[in-house]
Image 1 (cartoon, rainbow, N blue to C red):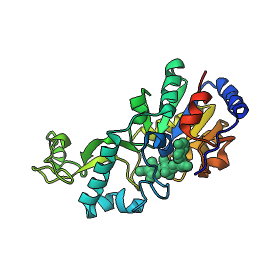
Image 2 (tube, rainbow, N blue to C red):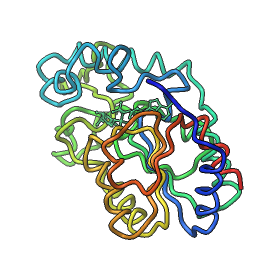
Image 3 (tube, helix red, strand yellow):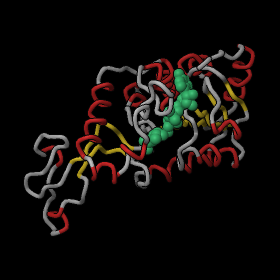
Image 4 (cartoon, rainbow, N blue to C red):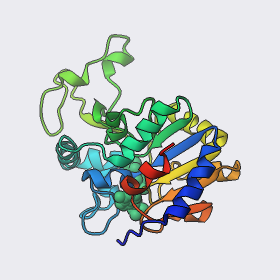
Length: 256
Ligand code: OAD
């Protein structure tokens, strides 16, 4: 992948346009974490799907048919994440929000927690969080009106399991075909409709409803700025395409 850094004059022009904005939304994807060492999903050689199709791993059906394989894939990703740190892109967003309270909304498809680790507050995590666990099925005890079993107390295993009701623990992420967390998508949609500019950073724009947020912002008249070293499916709604990496572009772009 070739990453040409946009000319300073192009960056400065976009920055001037952002300075006039009351509300900016950053819609981020795996690319924002690439420079922290987290593989993206679709990069041919190293991507997280390089050996499997998404449907083989990130679906409820995949988990039910081979819980150990799916659990171990997430366990590998958790181990990887334990060693990574936010990069200059995450930090530029968090620092901007500190300088301009209430002016930036961060909406992410990432489950890695790196925006939060950089200090971004109130991140709208559309696809959940890798750090969390929950039961695969509703706890039967809750259905009978008693306090449910706690996933934290599950017996260790691949995956951990409840010794009382046999329920399996699954990661608290959104799998293909599942609804996004209640309320989060609604808030992200409201932010997309309300913003004057949306920075679409490090996403292929291939997965909906997340990608649809850029279309909502565009239809509502916002300036859509795509930050990506390669072409993305959201280039068609971009008012500006900045070809480069998020860690190179976001710090100068948001330096006001
Ligand atoms: P993808 O792997 O599809 O796309 C990553 C994007 O980041 C590509 O467009 C790359 O060109 C770009 N990129 C790579 N390095 C970059 C860098 N340093 N700076 C900026 N951009 C860079 O990841 P997502 O679009 O996030 O969903 O994938 C969306 C969803 O698909 C994920 O949240 C996940 C996956 O299936 C679920 O798990 C539900």
